[in-house]
Image (cartoon, rainbow over all chains, first blue to last red; front, side):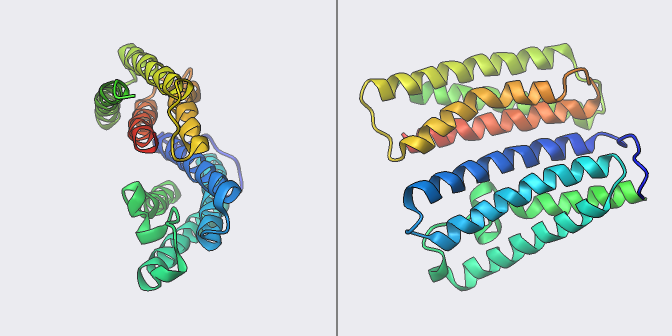
Length: 131
Length: 118
């Protein structure tokens, strides 16, 4: 679907709001951590920054998808889900690699598991839009 | 500093009320009512009082574990509702109530985090 269309429905507005909040929360958190104590857990803080950038990209992707361009959103949401699952699993199996928690540690437990739920909700919305 | 705790819990409770009202409005597919905006602005007022209290405590000599994080939460506390309402300005569709609900939940969470970082 390449032609731009009017946004369908309005669920994407709520998704956009949640993505904006997570981009702000993860971005601010990781930047403060990298600026003040980067040597304590560089991998964890870098992954938090990667999560923040993913949320920023996800915000743009969902906005584009609401106008009819679904491709970028499909890629970004799967990348985000893969990130949460990979980092979440590693944080459980290899806790020593993460002296401090990342946004995606324990599948986003520190954020009420919303980081794991969010890409799933996004993909479900995308599926609805596609059909 | 202890006076901040009850104010923060009032903010959390009121934010929960606004979030519930927004979520119910979205679930019922009802156009966003004016009173939801008024509730959100009341939440902004309470958040502003909490932010001023937190800044006053810092000015009085309280030193949070991480000053940058603490001040970041203070800034977020007062920015979330205006940004949320701005995002749905001119749109009174049912899902715009969901956006107000998300902003209210975020304010509640930030208020708790503010207490944890002081």
